Image (cartoon, rainbow, N blue to C red):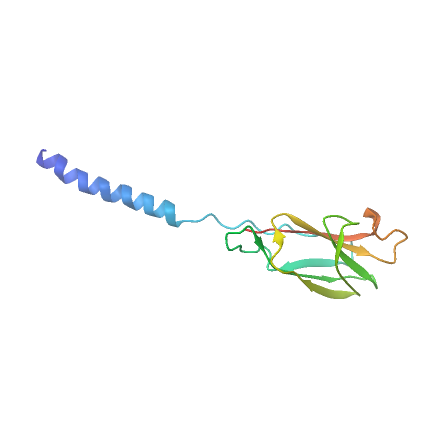
Length: 130
């Protein structure tokens, strides 16, 4: 091996190792939460959102709301989905570790003629798990 090649090889090796280390250590920025779709006078949010998973792909969060409707239900997956919580103008419901990425929560107005219809939906919240 010539003197020139011997001097270049360690420098290139260090440069390549630095690039590999930078790539391995840098994580992409987390996706921002998807804003809730709500009717006027309603707020619907999750804390935390996004949820940081322990690698299982699931997590836990608290869903909270504020609305003008006097009686609401929080449903999972659709307007007529499984009821997860209920309350009045302000409320919250705490999940256990079963929320998965993209899970949707629907806030339904129970005073509507058909509370399980899309017309009775006050808000839709999509939760992100990373």
